[in-house]
Image (cartoon, rainbow, N blue to C red):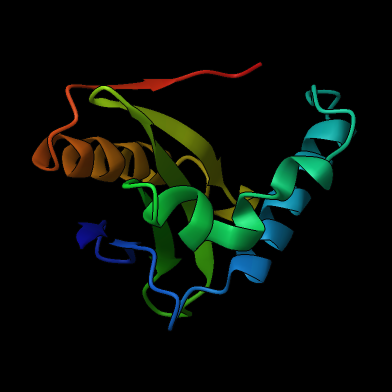
Length: 132
């Protein structure tokens, strides 16, 4: 757990607490905001969310992880990021998103730090992030 300014925490995905459907919905809201701001490159947002509706299958089971930042007082999800095992000691940072009301507070940095730190401790030699 990484505390953020005493008001946020970042924890590994926990299926008992973190609802993949809620994460997918929040991701969709972020993407829709990008459409409004003319900053979206995806033509089919819903098709781009298969992994978020099955976090265990796409991230955890193949040897990666997924991290969720929550507001400590309300419990609301503030952001999330995944690290997917690409094999050969490489982890790919995926789905980094911070929900609009929580931006500019260091949450994105803390999420990436949690993912990269976890990867390093679990034998990954490199972590990368790509957008197509």
